[in-house]
Image 1 (tube, helix red, strand yellow):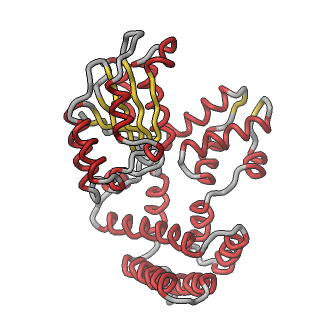
Image 2 (cartoon, rainbow, N blue to C red):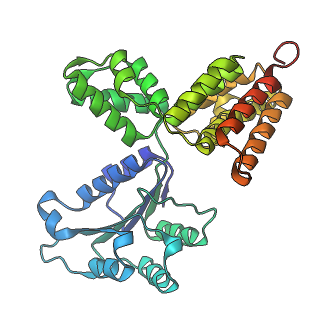
Length: 351
């Protein structure tokens, strides 16, 4: 069994009996933690947690220890749940890998194994071991991919968290916080706790967000890209200097800038093929980041695909120089911003 969305997993936990094994993974480690907890709460009553629940961190244990916990008998009765967090399948020795494969073929009766990938990624496209794990887990239990919530769901999450802390907040300000801090629910939750503690009670104000919430690198680079698109080179260079002053590494700034221009190129190509915003969102990993597609669709109309392709070429050149030469990264990025400006705005108009 495989759950491709959070709602499918919620429905399963609410209505179905627990399965022998689960693999929880995806881009939102907040959701991975949340549903590992909810599975534990469903399988093991609070009164039996000390007896029937065992948690392991994969880098501090071995497969034999996990297997022994699964085989152990609960003297209090009921279902026993074992949670293994952040398994790194590709780093297991051949012996450990063989033991894990054997264990996944059969889970003892009245026992549940939850593999919770909070910080270690699962990449079945690149890893044969993860492909094998997914196949076995789907055969015996269920995999759940928790890549994120929609923009609207994330806003509701922030509003609910705010209300829980005795405050209220305007939905548009929630949108601004997401733009500023990114869509990681764990980070957003921490930022909202900070804002509510500062506000005390009443309405969270934009001034508090400006004062307390740290801008994510991607948000700053998005502003930088918008300045270039708008033909404001001096302002873009000022933002670049601010990023340096905050300690941002040139290669990280370039990576985020690449993302902005890739979004633009994808959306421009989609436009030319008669495709919509929803088509782009579905084709690529934009769940919870739909605003990126919306903004790119709007901005891409102003430029030809040839000019945007030229921008990607300039960014690729910069990336190659950063990784292969001893040139000053800051100067390389300043030079690249200037070249991007000329690529987009040289000649008459913005075509």
